[in-house]
Length: 380
Ligand SMILES: Nc1ncnc2c1ncn2[C@@H]1O[C@H](COP(=O)(O)OP(=O)(O)OP(=O)(O)O)[C@@H](O)[C@H]1O
Ligand SMILES: [Mg+2]
Image (cartoon, rainbow, N blue to C red; front, side, top):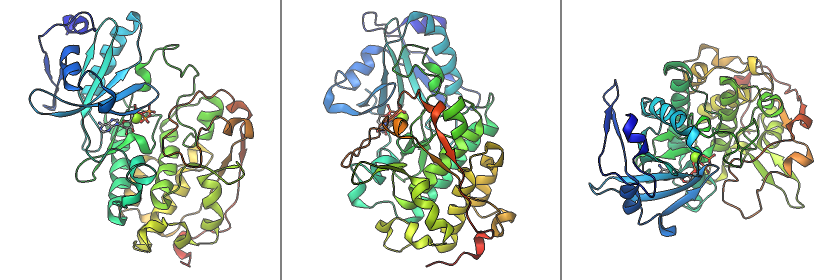
């Protein structure tokens, strides 16, 4: 593989392609810069799918007709080249129906590009809050499929792939949807590819405001439980159609847990569920899913379930399903922290990764939900 890594900077273009077959027979390959340049019409603005913390993403079509999404990373230094190669190789070996695997990459002296399959239904974010929000293509069945599939993808990262991978940026824009609305979690292990000081994310804490577990936000403590917390927020978002942080009239910002907590405590599940569903949902599944979300967003990481338990409960196999002793705990962001959030009233875009440097001052507030038996809550 050695020679391949110097093949495709914008100045040096080599035509040769290398194809790598991973142990489970999935193939990916090294692309030349020229090939990706042609496929994306010169990385034209018309082909741009969006922009995230690491760079821009472009739609493209290869000469053999494959539709691809090309993530063009912000420039990297040459010292990071080998680290990039090793990491990409690890990610290239990860294959699961709910993970957006690599189709290939291009690494040269001054360019890093990662190639994925193009997902025609774009991201969950675009359906919940973005360009497709008005079309209401996400009925209840699809929402459950997205929640369960995403959980299965994370379970694989945490428990099945070696070495285990902690995603660190589970959020709606990182859940992509194929033509059948099957979810594919994207950008796993990706934060590690970016060396210190290269992107705008220079702090220890990487992630997206609103989804961050308190112990990660405050002390940078990373574990699988951080992903579980973020998944809990994502699940609430799928069920309620609300953003993780929303701006109220008057400028006050409110987290989704702050909004949901009183309704959950009173068992007003029908008021929780996204009104766009027009009441068309399965009540038992809703209760079970809310239950899972509540467990996932607990402040103490050791109290959160692992992803195996999450998947089991969501798919209905959990024997504990009937009796859950828990309480919802809300991370109340301080004002100066919420100032980092770029959400505006009419803003559909994901604020993306943001530099988070003031979490040491974040106040964690514990709120007790006065119920024990989730299964006994009445629907209103
Ligand atoms: N394979 C793909 N198919 C279709 N759309 C994609 C694909 N990959 C990324 N996108 C879209 O491109 C946009 C930019 O993605 P990108 O991952 O760079 O940023 P992000 O997910 O918003 O933030 P982050 O940098 O934290 O991942 C997002 O809207 C994303 O949904
Ligand atoms: Mg992303």
